[in-house]
View (tube, rainbow, N blue to C red):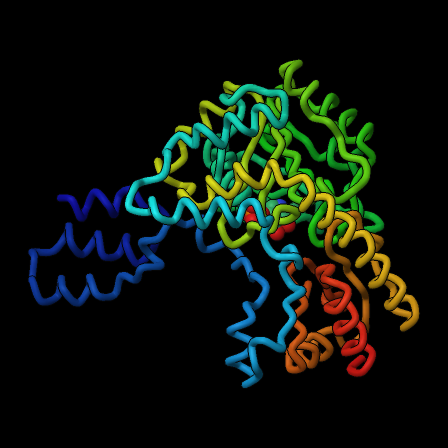
Amino acid sequence: MRWQGLVYSRKGSHALQEAEAHFVLRAPNPHAQAVRMRNISYADLANPSLHALPTYEPGKPIETVALEYGIDAVSIVKMASNENPLGPSPMALAAASAVLRDANFYPDGNTTLLRKKLAHHWGLAPDQFVIGNGSNEAMILLAQSFLLPGDEVVFGSEAFIVYKLAALLFGAKPIPVPMPAHTHDLDAMRDAVTAKTKLVFLACPNNPTGTTNPPEAILAFARSLPPHVILCVDEAYAEFPTLTADLRPLINEGRKIVGARTFSKIYGLAGLRVGYLYGNPSLATLVQKARQPFNVNLVAQAAAIAALDDTAFVHHARETNTAGMHQLATGLRSMHLDFIPSEGNFLVFHTTGAKRIFDTLQQRGVIVRPLVGYGMPESLRVTVGTHAQNERFLQTLYEVR
Ligand SMILES: Cc1ncc(COP(=O)(O)O)c(C=O)c1O
């Protein structure tokens, strides 16, 4: 009976319906039944949403490239995942090391101290924060908390791929809106909103394009959305541009807006996986319910708390990025290569034969990111590195292009 119950709950799978007919209509023959059971694949049993899901392709780790090409890992520079080239915040590193001795304990499942610290940092209340295993997880939790099959999710056609994944994962329909000049077209996004729209994602700055919209335009866009729509402003790189929108007045007004931030970029803690949502307490309370009890580990919590005080490191990281961006832009211009001016810690440049250039750079120990998955097959994305790393990238690109 249990087996039949499973079959009835998975509509649309022919293999299962046939198996069900066999199971129900014929006298049970244990051998035939075993053969039939073997013909049912895991794919038949899977949640149908998974079939449409594209695979997220992360930047290649240094160790993998070292193995693949037989080169010394120490000589490789990874400029593929928009990580901080300066390493982790030193204050975060010290806190993380100190707390390791308590690794026999579960972490605080309520992330009490981190939410308190964030509340102080932002002038908000602790119950306005949801901490995730990276902001990636936090945004998936947001989607999980609100999306139902048939809902629509609006985002830019060249926006961070996770928005599309979040929609598909919960059976919602992704609505990508074209991005002229690689920038979010806020009017077109507003026009794409229907009665079925539940979530809108807006990355400021966006990955991979590096573009952002003026803060006033973002706030006006947020105000223009109807009350059945939640706007998630993804601010993973918001510490890099000179101007960013302050979402707090809109949150306090009761607008359906939520910010997503991360410790992966300016604080240099990508490997620890910690990020957060901030918004209305009633939104946060709902999203908290979708979360696993210990989703953010002990070390990540301690490091994030300390990182928020490391203003000297943040300042240094921002200055290094500004100088590095200038260095990369100057180098690309001198090679007559077009690029998209970026407000983040990465840059997209256009080239013919991007696949060959990507492979050759990698063979020579410089890892960048191809953008085929974003519909930009003749573009590559490079993360701003230290002065020496940028120089190495530019010199190698000059030789291989
Ligand atoms: C736009 C954007 N949002 C969110 C994330 C996810 O960051 P996290 O490491 O916090 O999951 C990234 C990571 O690259 C990103 O580019």
